[in-house]
Length: 428
Image 1 (spheres, rainbow, N blue to C red):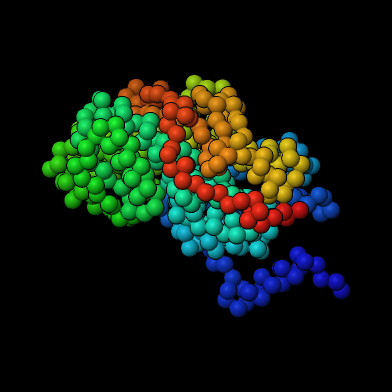
Image 2 (cartoon, rainbow, N blue to C red):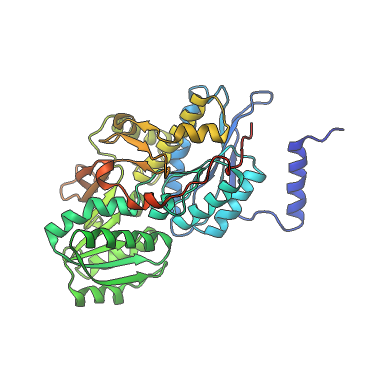
């Protein structure tokens, strides 16, 4: 009896499992095609379900799957259904590497999408570049992701720490003062976002009185907050994310430090604040999207989300879900347009791609920088809403910045691999 390539790979995987070398960790297939139908297009989802960014990873996953489901409801892409396989990257670069290897070599995915933590995204992108698999980093915001750690196959869909700092710093200096204290999570995103914030703030005339690195997983912030009390800065700029930010925020409020000094929280991801009320959104912070933006399509997107996820605890979509949705939607559109899943054709169609403000539910047109693969988009500044219209209305949008006014200098250090040095990759 002839042995097909698929059956051979399946038998190899079973043999590996028997030998103890199989991938360990939660993963899930979603198959929607019938026997004998056209081969589906398969997306590998690398969204966290555990670790520091578990909530954000699952919020991102919901947005990504929404776009896949919408495409299938319209007949699929290239006349083929789109399926996905998901694996938990655990907010861990080592796990991200293993997941990416398995997705490409054993699951035979056409494309990869996901990752919240920038170190994990970087690890995934290195594997993706090795094989040539197009990878959409949907929500990691370290400036290095589209800077020194850029790759020809990787496209970065979130604003980065430098974008948010540029949107906030000048106004904060003018409004609150020049004496700044910086605190940041001590890993790649926090370190690089802090460096970008410092560079921007000093360039606008701020003086930095202290910088404090905060280990990931910090649960007692008393010593750090005492430093803030003693230093009496005008502004505290915080690059702290995930569960650490939730804990920090509560202890800042408990010590009465949420009003003075002024707080610049580089970016406020919706899953990190949802459920805590508008009072939890203290200080000024950046975001790429909000469910009450006055922009075309926003209301329809919110309703579609609520229809698909009626029992989800986070009952309105936020920036993380939004990024996952618009990124996957654009990837599937491009595949349809080029008529192929060939990686180089898809990459070339994405480079320099323009996307209208109305289509993206923002206030300024966006485009993909062909030299860094970073999506240049609207950045919003917000603060906690003192007069919310309902229980989900945490943010008051203060301003929107067009892409060019907050462009990150880090993008300029990107050195993409050549097309010739990028392996051809097409799962057919």
